[in-house]
Length: 149
Image (cartoon, rainbow, N blue to C red; front, side):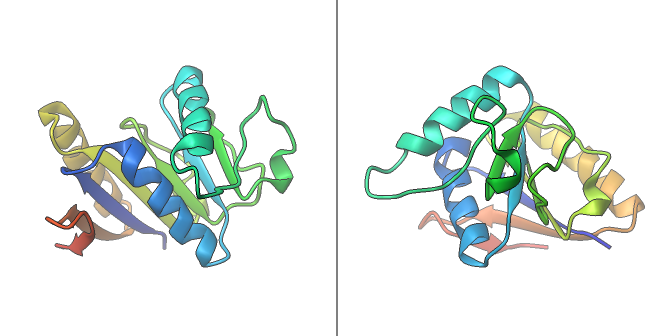
């Protein structure tokens, strides 16, 4: 059974929240695959992760960078796991048929977009029906996360 965490972004953007979540993944010695909605989005996130914090280093790569098996964080718009990741991060409302092959899946969605919230509710229902262990996390006033369900 896969643990699926839904992250309801309200006070921070994906670009602000994603690096922090990936830092936590790496702190635990895990590897991640970030599945984005398009190759263009992968390129934008790839660039952002190099520049989001001048005092930080978040090792990652995408197809243009190569060396997939060596990357602790792999960014892609394809259903793949070339780096042997145990964590899958879903952004842009994407879904994955491979969720059950990961120990942990993090679904990040924009809580300020009504359509994104409705779509996340549908993904929650689908994950629940599939028997995954679900948790729901919401941003608090300090920018941290609180487990709500």
